[in-house]
Image (cartoon, rainbow, N blue to C red; front, side, top):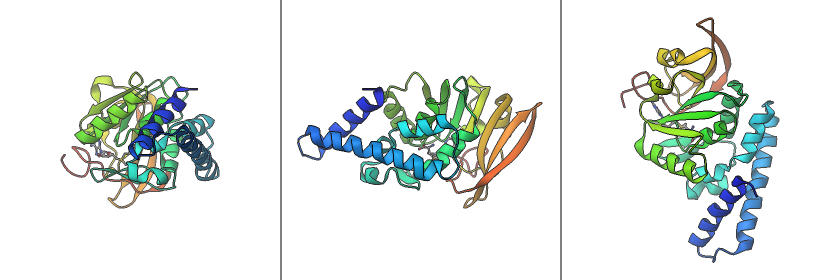
Length: 247
Ligand code: SAM
């Protein structure tokens, strides 16, 4: 049994016990089988068929138990093709968007990555399977705390550092990063984030209006930005000094 199975077993045992049917083994096993089947279908239908090709990304998406990152009332919807509320007016991103952003970072496993917008911690857990270390910064203290607790419970505390603060200015103490991914929509590309990339590093960020943005990949080549456009998307706004408003 790998750590994912143990995590699923503990998670579903707690749920089954809480909901009063005695934590019967059959219910827990059926829930684990349900989640495994949902993840396989999600990867096939939502990711592979829509063009996600990086096998490491597909494997990470198949392994990370997304149902453990959503509110209890949304567990049955956790593998559906859309974002879900996580509290505080925020969302866990659509699975396809998480995979597309991770693929754009082109990670091989040796990289140090900064994620801006921890939210539930789901994307950080996916990135933790793809990179050497993930720093993830969240401006909402309650979300930062619960993501930190969740990631620790899942045994990821040594690979993911959760920081509470304004990520629109990056996170200078651990810079530079091989990759930076911003999970919230920015009015422009924050210069501080670009500065915190290594030469050859990649920044993936939704840029545009509050209600519609373009996902951009910005590579640092010879110290200058080289921009590719990856398609349209819709994220919650990036707040803070280089976002839409002060935190
Ligand atoms: N990656 C997350 C996940 O896997 O659940 C989803 C992120 S959610 C779409 C966007 C998050 O960005 C919210 O939790 C929001 O509080 C956070 N956020 C917005 N502006 C921020 C800022 N300046 N610094 C850090 N976090 C910010």
